[in-house]
Image (tube, rainbow, N blue to C red):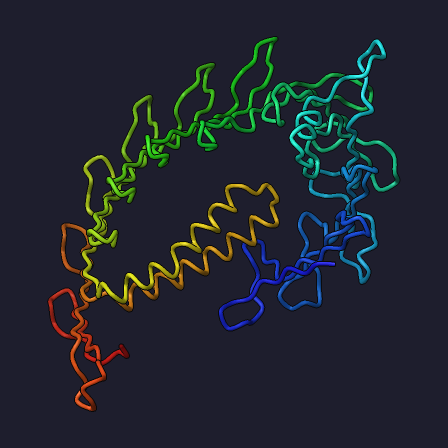
Length: 401
């Protein structure tokens, strides 16, 4: 059994983005996941998502999940329920799959994963998915789909052709998904979905990613098909300095066939990679929304960077590598908490901070002066003066060094 608990910095119960405080997972003697329950922060009632409070799994001898059943929010979470798609049980078939002439189909996805010694993740490499109701009989979901056939057209499950059928074996539609393609550095460069309409393969959506020679992401673009044409919906372009610090983020959207600048952020850094300038503008006219200039107490600030940045990068690497949604949520929460803590440290070690609003009018300013404490030559104190937009002092005080 494994328990995942979300708390705030004071250790009090705190739900994640789905208001889940605790996740209770149960495993069998082989280490296979057999159930998962989600609880709210009061810990007395289960978290419901599409009426489902508990999910129970069954496996084949190889550990592949072959059944997933949904249960509701009674005391034992034993009442059978259907999810938001109208399905109580999903059944997955992996190897027992044949063509119309009775010949077995080679599961390329399973073959390549086993060849590399990689265990398939839940649902990976399934060749058939079927839907069943609370009474155990086959049903169609809310889209009218009873069975989905999958044909893997790329190694390691990077592409799959999906075909959908009704209960009476009537073909509904087919689509192709490109889960990802990678560059030589292992970064994702494409994520796309296609549908077959009137015998032609049509793009539904596509995400395209590009990188510079140092492997920094420079383009994140989203495309859709509109009126039979593949069109750019939105994109973000990024630039970096020679030390790989991001200096520009420009976000565009397509309006009436033209790329329009929505927002832009610019940053500058000192020789120790500390951010010394930040500005955000809005629209084609680049109207200034925010500008900040900072100066740091370098020794203390650098120590904070050394402490936090490696851990932040380590979590980001794990996020890019995992496909497990529950693990992603947990890592995202840790990353968010760590970044907040890091930002508070950076703010503490900031000597000068000025914030400007529209038309570059000063909104607020904070200046700090480090001097020796009269109580003893070995002690230092930090005096802080906060000013309003008219440069009038609004707060004067001391901070601990």
